[in-house]
Length: 139
Picture 1 (cartoon, helix red, strand yellow):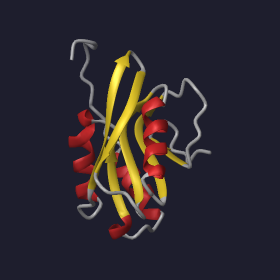
Picture 2 (tube, one colour):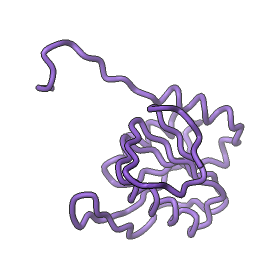
Picture 3 (cartoon, helix red, strand yellow):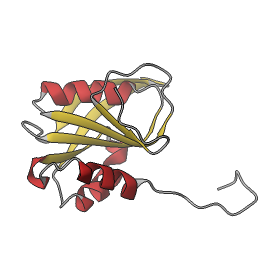
């Protein structure tokens, strides 16, 4: 890895987030897992498999610069579903916020955003946010 001269373990938060989502008792046929970008599809697919092989949707976005993204399209169907967006890190939350707005626009009943590391440079306007940093449901 290059940053440490001692052994480190990569810690995955997937089991903790899956347990939390299970506590929400959303029927598996009501779920759709969403990757907030093409780069996160493998992570979202692995997450979907753990949620009774839930369907997958992908937010198509373009980056115009560092921390500047434009959401273009949604690949997949979220109408009437509970959408669970899965990302590794949320920094400015631009991708998550615009992705959540697109999911609502496309008919998602509820949107959950899940991440391993939440930085939050700015205030968010999300219905549900699940982060392993402090593991709380936000706003």
